[in-house]
Image (cartoon, rainbow over all chains, first blue to last red; front, side):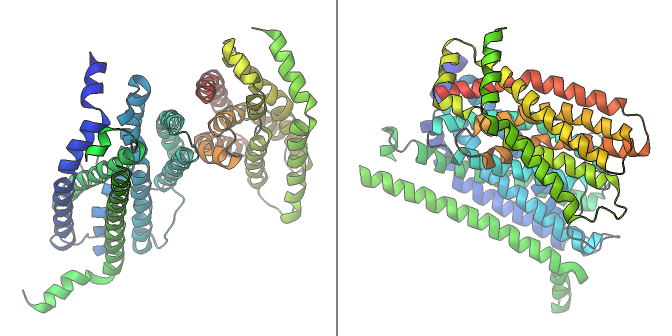
Length: 242
Length: 52
Length: 216
């Protein structure tokens, strides 16, 4: 029953049709939303008492480092769906998330190190969160090169998904062990459970920027998955009608 | 709003340079990703149409 | 359990002397070149040497397991095992044989090296024990990487497996610090043994799944 549902409605064909219709307005909407969030954060909030104006990088750094981890989790879900139900669309989406994740992770590292120059006085510090983000970046790059190394893309999908699942089991372990190795970094300032330690004047634009950045990146993922579908289903008959 | 406070707002004190670098890099990355993907999609579509 | 397969595996690796003597010799050469690039007479903290041992063991283990599946894959032996439903056994035996013939000798070479340093025998023997345990973890993960990147070169295998080994390296590093401070190591050691048991019992199943996909 579930299987039938998946195969009818989650086929690359119907997904492509829906995505083709909505991806452009979706991207434009979230792009404008993110720009307004950024403008709010950059120009209409007071400077931080300790860090001055350089703290404003938070409106780009925090959404990016948040997304870097969320994208891996999403990739794990789609990979599991692919391995369990043999759903091709899930494999395509999974594969197309990897480059976007690598870009976002790179940006998170980059913005963090630029932020480090005025606040810590150094662009790199061997502390827990930076190191685990760097490992995450290497894992994304490894996944991309694993998929690229196979001529037979069906096998590549399977290996990719297996590696993503092993990775997602290991990421919490890596994070915990790296935390154990070094505990220099300030602990996360926004958590779901406890009261945030950041002033509401800065918190609201930060929340706004995180939400709009999530939308923007998912728009990119949809665009990239369209590219993947077109490339992989080039010789299927349905594709001739677009 | 006079011009002085506008430049003040845009330069963001001493550390404005760092913020602007990050902003520029973010939009270059996002923009180039979108443009690249769009170009690739268009290319594949063209190939498919030629084969028809 | 099928002991004849185990004996065949032992014989096969033993016959290819280059495959198991080579890594040990390479390790020896690396170890010889280490004191040459660092002035060994100056009072360097022993952590430097131990950290160097962890890293070079990691890389040499990778070298040693590079061809763990590729030969059997090419001559069709692996396919035969797959048909007889013995893939999981063969993976398990291969890892075991590589551990005994490559992992443990490496640990002993490292042990000899630490004896030559200004380190107490207590810490040297802990190093030996840690290396014996962690080499099995390394070999398991590298076999996984090699199964994934079969015939694609070992760089890819390294790239995708080293991130998973970072927690093990961190435990080893923490262990050396506490050993040099004279603290109890039972906690670290039991953690390492636990990880070893977990890894050695789960990874072979994943590897056999990957190999079966390769053979499809």
